[in-house]
Amino acid sequence: MAPASPRLSAPPKSTPTFSPDKTSVIFVLGGPGAGKGTQCAKLVRDYGFTHLSAGDLLRAEQDREGSEFGDMIKEYIKDGKIVPMEVTVQLLENAIMDKDEGRGRFLIDGFPRKMDQAVRFEEAVCPSKFTLFFDCPEDVMSERLINRGKTSGRTDDNAESIKKRFKTFVETSMPVVEYFEKQGKVVKIKAVKSPDEIYEDVKEAMVQRGIEPSAK
Ligand code: C5P
Ligand code: MG
Image 1 (cartoon, rainbow, N blue to C red):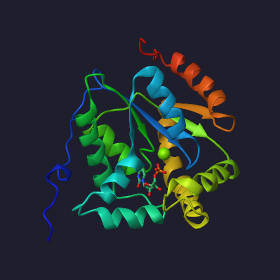
Image 2 (cartoon, rainbow, N blue to C red):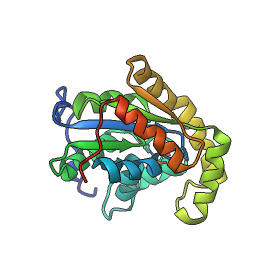
Image 3 (cartoon, rainbow, N blue to C red):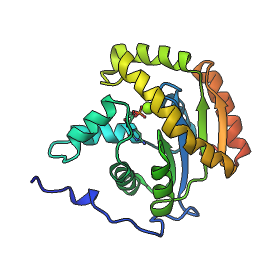
């Protein structure tokens, strides 16, 4: 058997590694094509967040030479299924440690997409401040993804995978949004207009949650 990556084998813990007093975590959720990555880039520019996309981390692990998880991740992504949470939570925890740079403000994009990820991350890594949820109808998301598929090179930006990803989003990820909503921890943003128009609403939401832009 190939040697396990030592950094992907931390045991479950009951105390979070990072204290929410020092480390701010904002989850960014929304269906595939809702514009999470686009809005995160703007927030990084203006607020000094470190952006961690769970999907990007999984794709990097999938392509990492010698990864024991590469083949598994590939299959899950193509099928639009949620990768077993141990892998994703550990990749995120590693990335938070690597990229903290002392700023301690993180946007975690495309995560948690399933209840077990939400519970494990908040227990073992860091409780979230709130979730930014980008709400967008499927027909709009679908058009964006088909367009993106022309250049993204992603194995899941095709009609068949998109259908599966929508199903997973409704059945598996929306319950996470509802779970945080019950705790008063969801900021919902309509995500149909242009990126700049949507971003105006995002900035307004940040004001309401007491998050200031970083000094320029
Ligand atoms: O967020 P993104 O669209 O880049 O995610 C691509 C795929 O990565 C998802 O469809 C899913 O297969 C996987 N993923 C996951 N768990 C997450 C985020 C992404 O399994 N929290
Ligand atoms: Mg993305």
